Length: 78
Image 1: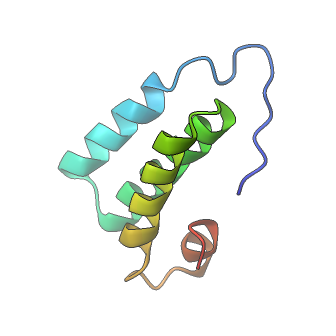
Image 2 (image 1 turned 135 degrees about the vertical axis):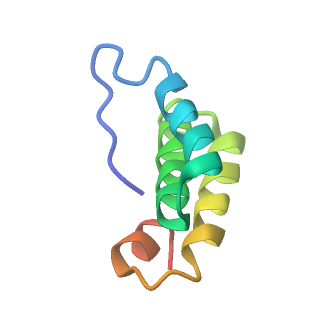
Image 3 (image 1 turned 180 degrees about the vertical axis):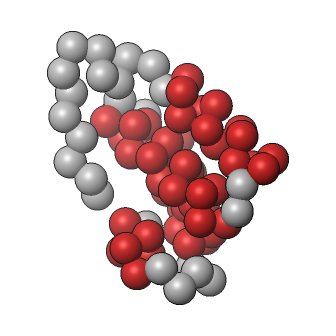
């Protein structure tokens, strides 16, 4: 998992990443969708919202699995 620094409100709100997830679900390709879900999972993990974090990370993993993108697959746990 990515080491996320918590400094002065960096992770107070995940509204920007939630907007990204929503956008890429409507307009993005699979790589962008997987990345958006991955980062939403990372933010939720940093906020100790573990159930949501697992949900988003598993979604990212499922989206990344068929892609031939080693860095994305490694981030998602493959």
